[in-house]
Each structure stands twice: as C-alpha cells, then as structure tokens.
Image (tube, rainbow, N blue to C red; front, side, top):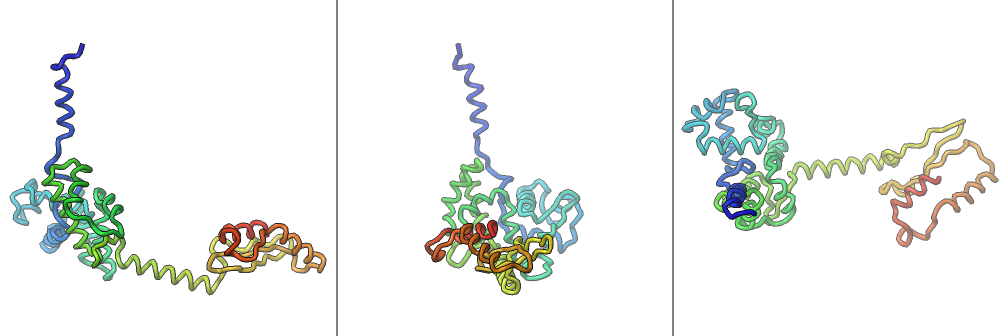
Length: 278
C-alpha cells in the first residue's frame, strides 16, 4: 500500500525539475550592440589570447564571474563572435564586421550573428517576412520554451527585438527579413547569370547530348529554353525518306500530342516524356 509520506519525495522531485530559471545560457541576455561594443574594447586594447579573468580585470569588471561580464561573454559566444578555447579570440565572423573586406561582409555578419543563436531559430522561422510580435507575446513563447521566470523571459524577449533591429533585419514596415540585402542581391545576380548563360547556350544543365555510337550523330531541338524543354535524337547522319517517315510516325505514337500546353499536361512532365522517348 502506498502512503502519502512515500509519495512526497517523488512530488518534490517533480517540482524541483519544473522550477523556472532566473537566467538563460541558451539565449543572449545582452543585446547585439552591447556585445559588439564589448568585443571592440577587447580588440582595441589588445586583450586577445588573454584568459577571461585577465580580460575582465583589464576591462574593469569585478571578476570574470560577475554578471555583467559573464552575460556578455555568453552572448558573444552565442552570436558566434568570440572563441574562448585559447583565450578570448575574435572569430572570423567578428572580423568580417570589425575589419570587413567589403561592405556586404560587414552587413551580412550581423545577420549571421543573430541566426547563429540556436534559441532564436524557431522565432526567426516563425516570423520570417511577418511583423514582429509585441514583447509580451514573445515573452510568453520564451517563458514556456526555455522554462524561465517571467522577468528573465521578458529580458530575453527585449534583447531579441533590439538585436534584430540592430542587425538591420527589421524592414520599415516592421516585418522581419531573415536574409541580408547582400544575399538578395547575390540571388538576383545569380539568376541573371543563369539567364545569360541560357541565352548563350540553350542546352539545359544536366541534359548534355547523348554520346554518338557507331557513326551516329546526336541532335536536339529546343522547344522552350526557359523551361528546359527539348527533344533529343540520336540517328545516322544520312537517312532515307522512308526512314524519316517511319521516325515521324513513331514520334506521333510515342509522344502525347496536345493542341497547346494550356490544355495539356504539366510542362515539365511533357519535357521529361519527350526526352525519354525521343
């Protein structure tokens, strides 16, 4: 028989496991701008390679375990801007911001820093290209997801909202943009390059002519270069009129011919059928 006194330890253990925390190591509790200022001091005062205790002393903090220093170090590592395996070292991402090779690297570094925070990823996905929520709504999500007391959850929510703003991820209309302007520019440039290559060579990538065999030649007819639709034919270089007639009759049977694609099958499906059966 189970008594009430026997149940008490298990109940107490469950309560201890569900106790909400007053701080978080999974989310920054210092915003991106403050972290960048902190790292800039480490760099300008030549403190790289020093241990955390020495860095904290040189920067005027009480100790490396003091809350202001500790939270800045945690946030810097979550953003991917500091490596502490051998001293306090600026990462490549930090150098891309502080000593960029071009303006695009400086801008995209901040976008990457925010996206480096694993705890931010669900929030970024949820609100991508949408208006950011009020701090109280975001606080509820963080409080439940990371088991934090309301005050800590609100602090983390405020830090997130300030950080995405400081990184330039918030558009004028208040929507969240997960990609840097440089990424959009590169995407458009890549698309233009593909279109130019397609105009110069209408052969779609991955659909090279079939190698000729036994004196035969490979030919292709482009039906729609933009959609990658074409017909490929391998045949002897010389054929008779009777053979040409046979080919025409054979194609008419093998291919599904419709008056127009608007009333016919899916264009891509049609392209695959013609390539496989030609």
